[in-house]
Amino acid sequence: MSQPLPAFPEGFTWGVSTSAYQIEGAVTEGGRGPSIWDKFCREPGRVQRGETGDVAADHYHRYAEDVGLMADLGIGAYRFSIAWPRIQPTGTGPANPAGLAFYDRLVDALLEQGIDPIATLFHWDMPQPLDDAGGWANRDTAARFGEYADLVAARLGDRVKLWITLNEPVMHTYLGHMDGSHAPGRTGLDSAFPVVHHQLLGHGLAVAAIRRHTSGAGVSIANNYTAVWAVGADGTRDSAGDEDRAAAAGYDLLHNRLFTDPLLLGSYPPGYEMLAGADVDSVVLDGDLRVISTPLDWLGVNYYNPSGIGAPQPDALMPFDAPPLAGFPTTGFDWPIAPDGLREVLVGLHERYPGKMPPIWITENGCAFPDGDGPDTDRIAYLDGHIRAVHAAMAAGVDVRGYFVWSLLDNFEWAEGYSQRFGLVRVDFDTQRRTPRASFDWYRDLIRGGTQ
Ligand code: IFM
Image (cartoon, rainbow, N blue to C red; front, top):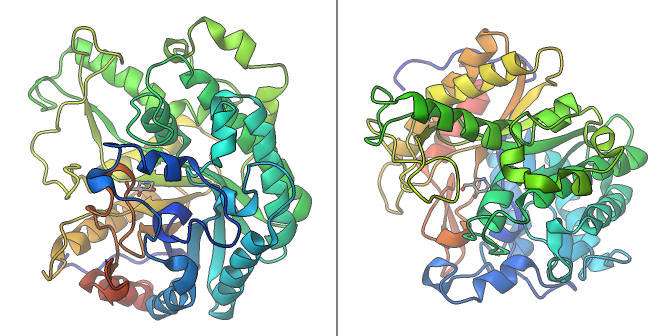
């Protein structure tokens, strides 16, 4: 951290990311319908201390103040998500004018400050009625998502030039539909593959919808990637054996390839059958992979930490175990801090998909540390290390165009409620007072210096 940061190319975009349910609040205002997170938060034991996104950071009412913070920070672009239940309160039918009007106001406020809006269409807050009809396990949801994308792009496509269809479908699948720790809280393997495939199909239909309403817009998906390191039961790489390495290869397939091979290569990676079972032919219909592999303009990479993976415990649901990775400092979430994992992920993507990989944007990277009045040095060190890792990947030939900190504000961190604070800006959730942390000043200085 004491060394100056290396120079980034002219035009490299610095930004911050957020998502609708995590900051907006106002869940019953402006005609918004219920989402799967509204329901999930009300189920006992699902979210720490029974917290909800009902108010969150009250961004719905305070967006102008938040755009002011972004202007102070000097970012070039802001990645936010659109709440599907604000646009289509029941998940189908015409657009709700008040829902569109909110994002109109937000987009216009950003543009007035010279900040490019980057809109994500789905960051996990599905309208509840769609989930009641099966959610992503139901093929019809992909078509509904395409229609929703059409409504949003028709309205915002004149001003929003960068689009993301889905956020982290891999995490939405595993946490929401396999281990049940996120909404909609399903468990098991039965519907996992249809959930994977229908999200991807919905993505492809949304790409077409966005392109119908925009000219020269860049369309993408943001996925979560991790560096996968084989470890023994003690969590060290040195003690990994052959079974651990085999388990790590399987995990790499599920986490890093399952949602990327179909997009870039037009096929699922060999071995995906461990998730799909015998049902593949009834789920993947003729022409689907062509829709899914519509060329992307760019790829969003969300990276937080590497994963230590070893051989599964007896009777485990999944064919791997994930013991804590030994020997690394950790964030408030106990996630290991290993910036080189980001370099490895970026170089790995570049090498795995030669000639197929569009330019990459780091659409999320950041860390949670316990709240307090401390000097925020841990967050600064985390960001500094990871930005250097991005630079190292670029020096190795990876085409990276932007970097976005997760997140602008402390927010509702899903099942952890408000306990994990990712913000460059501290939020007092009793008063909604915003206080920029030292990492805010540090990031502002980095952006101002540009290349430092
Ligand atoms: O808060 C989440 C975000 O919604 C998706 N990516 C990871 C972040 C930190 O857990």
